Length: 279
Length: 288
Image (cartoon, rainbow over all chains, first blue to last red):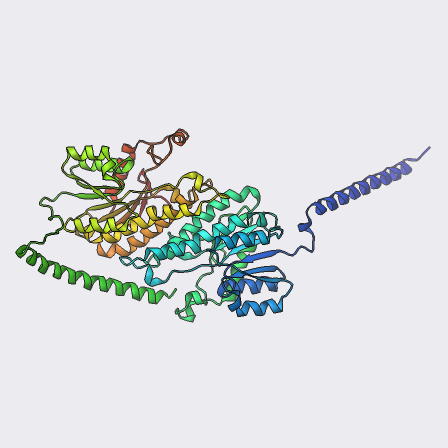
């Protein structure tokens, strides 16, 4: 005969046995799942691929992603002349790789995609851009060949990069395609006539990336545009410094918005302060 | 960008335009005196005798462009109906044969010389409405992610964006001389970034977003010169622009005559106050 008290004890023992069995089973399964997805391991180091990384915002992105321990593939047109980038490579030999890439050279884009075919790219950061020069886009004296050049760099190259590096992004943990756009591309906010080509290239890339966001959402990839605001880089040379924000601030603001992006907010156009810019 | 510098340059450009405009006006007055004294062998057409409204339509051989031509002629307008191959434009030529106010002319919007040539030919003709209607879609199969045909993008761009800008540059003086002073471009709801809800037509859509930005800029630029710039959309219309098999899949697809009439009603609504507006065919304002 067992007393009621002993019965309770036995049942408790049985319970804890079952519970620990379940626990072991769960642990076992989760280990199995983790083994299926090696990139989800704790020591996973994310990678960012940056275009136009030799100066300005691209260099700022490179510095800040390196500082937070990310691997950076920093691409630019002329690595030989990218002094600041080469200095960073000495400082971060295990994290930073420099690659030659002119984003309008699609053969080179494809070659790099092939070279890194086994490398997951967490953030594809499409930063390279040109303005086309103010004097080439004045009404009645439009140089339409320049329009094509501006669109090639600002609108088409980001889409080509996304197409070529789609599998790299898909196999990563973060799965983000980010384009540095501009508030100059906001049709709703345009209030003075200027920079016809630059502006329409940015409106066009916003449309292209909105399309891409809708296309890739169900594959878990998020796509967004970020705006640096007026920043003290070569791109803005000539403007008084008082009107410009330091590059470090512009970059850290954009990185904060990139970090906050999810598939739920895919397709957004982020102002540097985190608000949404109207189209 | 150097904003102040840009503003200063833009103002300088305006001043230069003004000076150049005044100069050419004086030169023109002097030249017209000279021309009456000694007839030139190659001359632009004479200024029209009657005060009819005039519209210049691109892509007038078929679809919406043909309907614009037909319906403006019913309203008693003078129409410069342009298309790439006037020799093959049977329907348009037949319409022009019945109405002497329709002139069929050649413009291929990607051939900028053809635009400049016609601008010279009609240099004495005030144009009330410059109607940039010509456009291409680029073919849905050329703009699928993963199989994007990048060269097609530049073809779409040349027709849908550069064409209207070049037309506006070359015919600016004609429009300024008109009474209505309108530069209207047929855009598309597919160019509305906030409204697209399914991924497709990367090239066509981004060309229309780019066009909307170009025309927004132009509206801002020409407002104080009293020129009105506007964007209209036809809605999904049963023209050659949409393949017959695809047309069947669009519920409520509209006839070209209805779409053109709707756009003409919206073109009438444009004033200097609402310059730069993007009108949907039903008169609602399209969001960007």
